[in-house]
Image 1 (cartoon, rainbow, N blue to C red):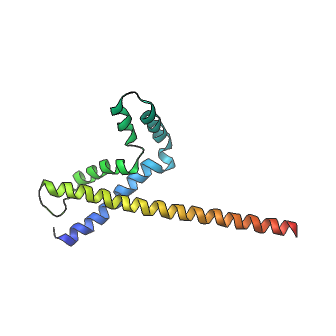
Image 2 (tube, rainbow, N blue to C red; image 1 turned 30 degrees about the vertical axis):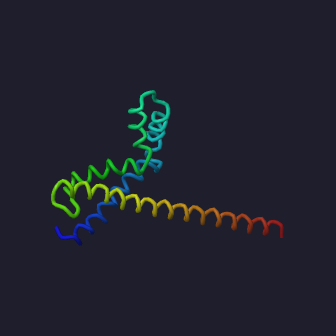
Image 3 (cartoon, helix red, strand yellow; image 1 turned 60 degrees about the vertical axis):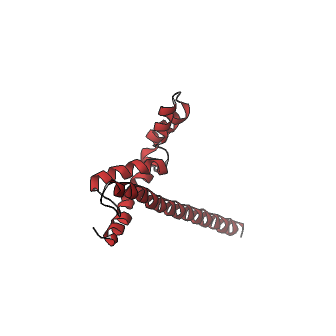
Length: 132
């Protein structure tokens, strides 16, 4: 596979990695299992168990395991055709997926801020109409 195809695959494969990682670690659909994992990661007596359950609460940590799954699923290697290509692909996919998640978080924060500002303007407008 030539380098441009590998870069294309890198950018595309990072999308489902970011999507799965973000969904499991942030979205409402997984809230109850995530809260259970947070509790176990903070209260379990054994270090190994605390670290294991923490993996399901951190999008960066979880993205490593999702990346391993996608590399195995797609047999994706980057730059080198041997085992080193898997390692380079793994860290590159994690990096790009986390860039996507950072952009997504920033976008969501901006949208939420705008909604709050709009609601404040509407409330101020309604209060001034009521006073008039």
